[in-house]
Amino acid sequence: MSVHQSGRDQARLAFRHGTFYMGGGSFASGVLWIDGGTIVAFTDGDEPPGASRDWQEIDLGGGTLLPGFHDAHVHPLMAGQAMMGVDFSPVHSKGEYLVAVGAFADAHPELPVIEGFGWFGDVFPDGFPTAADLDQVLPDRPAVLTSHDGHGVWVNSRTMELAGISAATTDPADGRIQRDASGRPTGMLLEGAIKLVQHLLPAKGLDHLVEALRRAQERLHSCGIVGWQDAAVGSSWLGPDALPAYLELARRGELSGRVVGAQWWDPRQEAAAQHARLAERRSSVSAMPRLRLDTVKLMHDGMVENGTAAMLSPLCGREDIGISYFEQAQLESVSRLLAADGFQLHYHAVGDRAVRECLDAVAALPPEQRSSSRMHHIAHLDVVHPQDLARFAELGCAANIQPLWARRDEEILTRKLPLLGETRSNQHFPFASMARAGATLVGGSDWPVTDPNPLWGMYTAVTRTAPREDPHAIGPEACTVPLLSDEAITLGQALDAYTCNAARLNALGEMGGTLSVGAPADLVWVDRDVSEVAALGSASVLGTWVDGERVFTA
Image 1 (cartoon, rainbow, N blue to C red):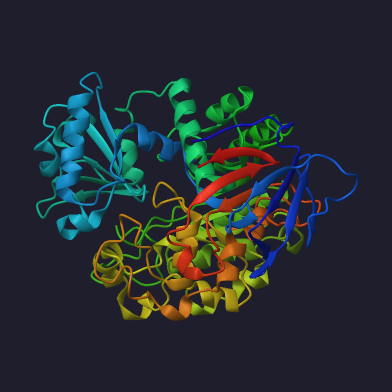
Image 2: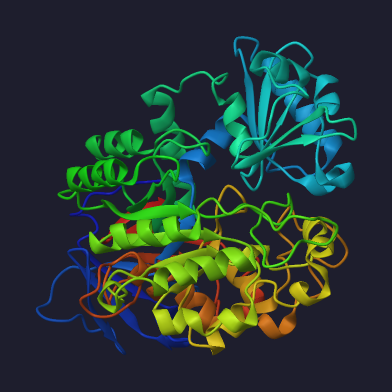
């Protein structure tokens, strides 16, 4: 459960009887002292710093105290809404998905549209569900069910009828309608084609959005996460604008996480007017202590599994090279426009061509607009060409990785690696190669695409296998056979990716994400000694603090 205790109750804390993560892969023992929301000392003995005062003791019971985790790429509003609709995350089979839809529809006869989130494609033939599947349990009401990766929706025949989607409907420039051999839509809409059905969804009131965001914040805190970069603030095909919900949560005094909102950029809109609007929104929250809008999200391609990733050469069995949402000249001009105004750039790039084009856009910036105080970053990086590995360090561009994806589960083995082929499969999530080339790695989850638990993400980053506790670790190789073991990073690199590196990415300074004296008391207490990698998969968070205030208790 989530708890909020008064600043007075949390003013002076002494953490003892555990292991402390000091950064850079280093662990220590001692006593950590917190006063007024700030770390004031780390000592070998029990004597408190300064004058004798009353201190509340926190006995770590042999567990580990770490700097609070930061998620550098996450979608809290989408995740919270997923928990309020048909939530596919606990199950992983076609039959269970259909049962869940039918049960939710029966329980909610008042809903005009059934919405859901989180299905995986590996349980369907050819990786995609069909309207015919869904019509079996929901023939009369529209349904819009978003895939776990957020890049496609599964709809039934009623939805396509109401939306006017037929064989004569053309694909939008930024998306695709999946079709059968005769050209008829099958019930799967990819990328920008999602917009074809969004008008059918009932508008979500502010109370609904606030509740979704509150649930998401509680879940993030339960994972030890004290701050995050929301990877799509603004109205888009990914969902409604999260800003009103953040503002309302803050107005109620319930925004307890440190949030950087990456404002959504629409490449179809006029640049100058859009820039002015984003700058105005940034200014509107400038006085808020825990919410900033200093970042802009530039989504440049799709994903490998549905064939929309921007590749240097076609995926196996396909003729095209995927989708780039920006022309290169446009991507560079928009990047220069935003960076010149002090915005951090948060690029989405999955394919090797998209990664290269985003690096080219960063290279087009004047050197003074590429700084560690406003670190631009590229998220996902499923495939990186070897020639581009060293460019991250050269350009000061961070590699925003989602480690929990780097494993050999059925989704990867059956839907992704065959499309990549042998050469590109060996360039798949090259975490260690980027680190060896000097790149700064920052950790994110892309939740609700995958679980937000950083401990699971770190386990996979270090072992390149899935934690057995993950319900989506499907297949005989997921937990036992590493995905490119040479691309495993060290425990210290993984921990730093979710602590000091991600905190610095979110402009919290050199002390952010550390247990340094003078740093904010943003902390996470884990129930065991996580200096042993094997402990990460089954470790649990017992407590989370932001500014010395306890925001989660197990």
